[in-house]
Length: 199
Length: 146
Image 1 (cartoon, rainbow over the protein chains, first blue to last red):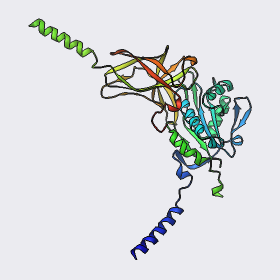
Image 2 (spheres, chains in turn purple, cyan):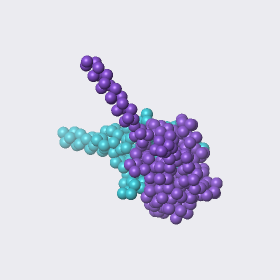
Image 3 (cartoon, each protein chain N blue to C red):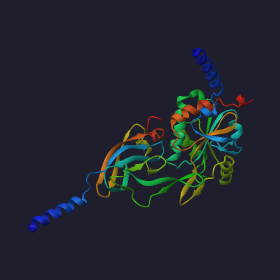
Image 4 (cartoon, chains in turn red, purple):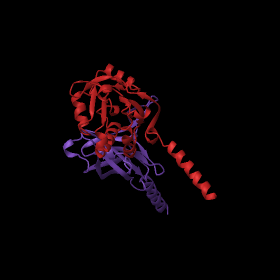
């Protein structure tokens, strides 16, 4: 009899466990956004001088968006090189991922300067620039505080990476200091978040 | 007798002015991702001193601290005073915090995997020259998690 009870308990436990299987979001180790926001709509200029519509160009892909500047020796190179290193180790994920760097220092971040800067990390990274007004609009659309570019105090900018899954939603962000192990865990999860599971 | 006491006093005074030992530098790495600039990170410990200058190769470094404002923007602020090290409190230079920004590097002479001469100039201990590894920024955070 006790053995039979144990079997019933085990069956119920297994059923409960299967029902409570973590959602894709539950498997993420980055900073999960409680109320995911949709991908912003903005158009800037890429490093070949063409207009780049962020929402359209990244549709159906995992998009990692970062607002930085090329003369930044501390935060920006670490964030970009962390992503580059992880994508090098995960070519299948990289094939479905677009990394988009927006150079917020409109004084210095020309398309040529941004291209040379990004090529140090990964030549596939997309670099964008624009006028001060265009850049501010893009940052506001993405929900980050617009960068402050000052001749005396330098550049103050949002230091986190925003991840938009293929479903077009921002489920998670990666603040500065995020480890490669976190990205290694999360990016394969994010590329599968196509929105099909909600339909 | 008076001379002996005076001599002892002089010796004690000299000893008091000389640091017990030079600062120990650990976990030092120059994060370099190309171009003409880099960031130097390290921990200095085990002494009472102030760091006056750091020279990487031929380039002088600047002491900066990355700070975050109330809205979440990060920015680099130059230090106005030399950073101080005490025996009780190590001096930590780390990504996203206090760091030495190095500008004016010759890209032809730097690449990850190499080592570079770095000179630390301390107020009490004087010049301290070390060979420090150049690392890709992806290794700047250190540790097994990357």
